[in-house]
Image (tube, rainbow, N blue to C red; front, side, top):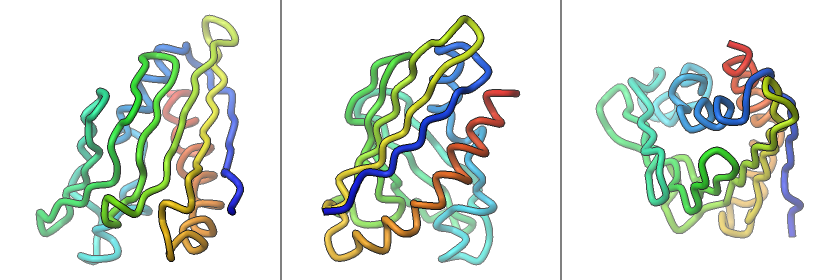
Amino acid sequence: MLEPIVKTITVPCSQDKAFDIFVDMASWWPLEKRSMSLMRAGGPAKKLTVEAREGGRIVETALDDEEWHWGTFLKFEPHAFLQMTFHMGLPEDKTGHVDVTFTPISASETQVQLNHHNWEGYEDMAEMMYQGYGGSWDLLFVEHFNAACAG
């Protein structure tokens, strides 16, 4: 069994703002570096659509207008916690889970913890996904999300 990948950062914004920025993934996710369109259509995605609510989907629209379902919000507790499936283009039944917790430190700082787990959900792709996201969350969450919060 693979251990969860856990990343914890302190961002320079309020709890509410940190949550709102996270769920507005299109504003900080580097589609030019991480998208299904790069792998399948040869260029960055046109857009990322996030339905910010429980049951809401995260969907990439590729260069050729093909849509790639990345995940679905399973729990959505504004501005404290969210849990989503995360399969970024894989079949929906091959998925891990990402939990994100937002804890206020002060009015202008928030601790945000990302926990990517349920690697067995990826079945035969678990090890590959684990290796890939081991470093990717540093780029995506620690670098890009943190920079968006710093604004």
